[in-house]
Amino acid sequence: MNHRLWRSPLAPDTPIPGKELRTVILTPTGKDGWLIAGLLERVSIPCHIAATIPDAANSIREGAGAAIISEEAFGTESMQPLIEALQNQPSWSDFPLILLTVSGQVTPQSERLRELRRPLGNVFLLERPIRPETLLGILEIALRGRKRQYQIRDQMQQYALAQKALLQSEKLAVTGRLAASIAHEINNPLEAVTNLLYLMRGDLPAEARRKYLADAEHELARVTEITKQTLRFYRDPAQPNPINVASVLDSVLKLYSSRLNDAGVTVSREVCAPAATVLSSPGELRQVLANTISNAVDAMRSGGCLRIRISEQSATRRAGRNVRVTIADRGSGIPEDVLPHIFEPFVTTKGETGTGLGLWVTSKIAAKNGWTIRVRSRRTPGQSGTVFSITIPRLVPVAEKNNSPPVEQDATALAS
Image 1 (tube, rainbow, N blue to C red):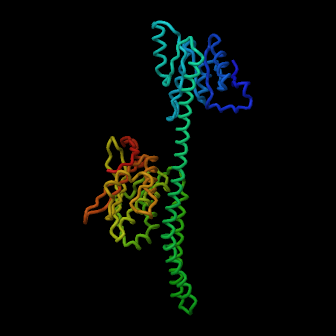
Image 2 (tube, rainbow, N blue to C red):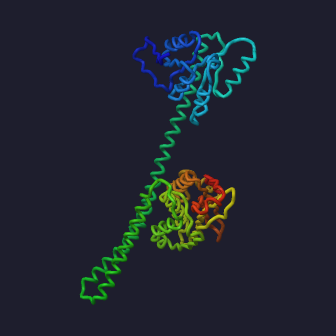
Image 3 (tube, one colour):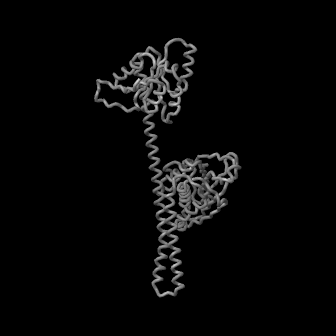
């Protein structure tokens, strides 16, 4: 039987809704399909008459508002294509089925059909013979519910787009925060080069001129390194690659060196696992470290010590071998009422100076990569401070793979 889209001839100028609101009809025996299609035609409800269960399943996948299926269809062929189409629905979808049943007493056959209906999910049962008003009323309820599902889908899509925009916004905010530090960091060596060039204009001994020239080259090399680190921050490949955690940390600290100096913050860097390698996008790991270190510096307005430790967790059969990056500050701490919500968007302790997106972005990156973030904070006199622990599954060298337990990744972001 050919596909057919019905439309009332009484309203020729009425626009036909898309496939999303059509009704799929599957009645393999008798004239029920054509009678139902004619009924829907009179009220301008688009429909598609399916010839087989696979045809109906494909139509549901392509887009439909509801389906009307007679119980006889289940006795002629396998229901598996229909069950698979319904079980593989998106999370927002609960596709409605109107099932036309045979009236009569309970029999072994009717019990078997009842068991077959269980996997179908959102089912309306209509016992024949059916009044047209009853069928249209049930179909209207089903389509109204389907429209609500589409609204939920659209809201989810809008939320996903908003999240993407927020991620981009935070990336730009990170760029802005780094810009001042980078400008200051570059300005110092450039001023030194300017002074050295001024001195070299004079009548100098060859040895002094060579020394000034070497100093100028050294300062320009500093500028080049800062520029490379900045470009690497945003131009790293998006695909995960084996990277050394300590080297990424060093690049972040270089970019923040001026800001750390200006804030009176000293860094205590302890690398217990210098060769620790993880599978990650360097840019994402850099952004997580940059966000966390930036928050720690902001929390220590009167200066202090920032302790950073890279260690390797001992191997266990449950967790495998992991790398842990611990970032601890002696700052103002996080209020108890804010701590459970710090990974939510727009939650900040910085007042008007904070966007409230840094830790939210950090948690999203961690969840995507299967990392774990835990945070502890205290706000008591003389003992305030915050500790972030970022646990990353370690990339085990090839020589160790055969003897290593499996890694079970935990993609959670916890405040504990």
